[in-house]
Length: 357
Ligand code: FAD
Image 1 (cartoon, rainbow, N blue to C red):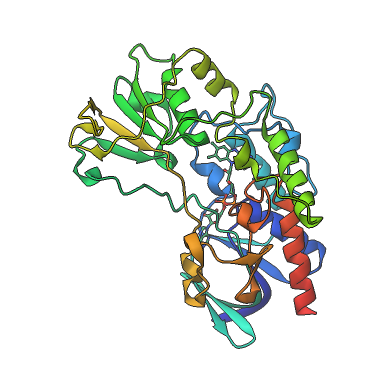
Image 2: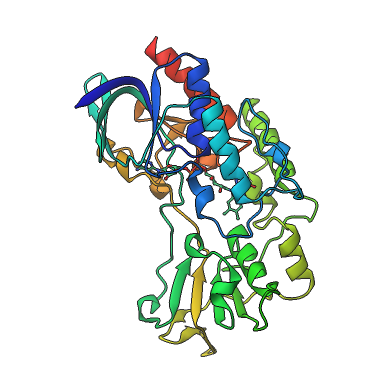
């Protein structure tokens, strides 16, 4: 059975919900499809100790401030899941769960959204599928020969799972630094973890006083500069790679985060550098990022450089009925953050309303 609707939003994480909020305000007929059985998007897949970069008030979707978490300046992931669950209910957003979108195709004046539980015809589609379901691991020689355990960021949960092990953490972004700190600061067990941290390049810490608030202010100032035709000051990446959140700062200042250069190959028992130095390991954690989950859009043939789909704001250049939301700065400054996604979500909803008129 095929049902027709004005707009299908694919993905019910923070970006999909922000889109839903604005579509509802504009009175559009829409639904949100999400493959997961429960709300929370990527926040259901983080490690136990992860806390937001920003206080709650700076981590809010449009319309509803995130309440503070008692006892925490920076809320944890469970608090975000609770906030998103409440947000969805409060605004009565029509989220249909446990539905995987498999393909979006052109179908005359509609886009056909094919799923594992039926097909919808939509006059417009917002894709907000995030990145967590597409972990990226670089092709390092020998990787498949390793006899120990290999994890990606998305599979790491807590230091106790690796107690007493020799662990190599690869990656110098926030995930790599935070997981490395998590392992070396663990005081719950008697046996230490033996950490080798390989951040791919010299770690670039942001100044200690820069947190999510300052990052958002920077992204906002950049957007204003671009809108007014002034010189591009660079995205937040120009400030550094690692937000010095309290555990990272503590581990760094205690000299526990010693960066090693990138090794040249993985061996069956560890990793090896070009000069023949070898470090044995029981586990390797690849904190090497994610790619946008866009496979369902492949039939539209829109793929551009670096696996992205070229956009003007959120609108796909090759298909004006399609918007992409939340994946990163390429779909709007800071649009992969709770506080940053509101504006591109509003712009996408307004453009869709105009298109449908
Ligand atoms: P997601 O939350 O991934 O939601 C996408 C949804 O789409 C998911 O529910 C997924 O299951 C669903 N989906 C995917 N494919 C399909 C399909 N084919 N069919 C149906 N459904 C599908 N962000 C902040 O705002 N503040 C912070 O302080 C912050 N700190 C962070 C710290 C670290 C260390 C890291 C790694 C990330 C941090 N983030 C932070 C980023 C944040 O975790 C993600 O960027 C954000 O959750 C992305 O939201 P999203 O809605 O775009 O995607």
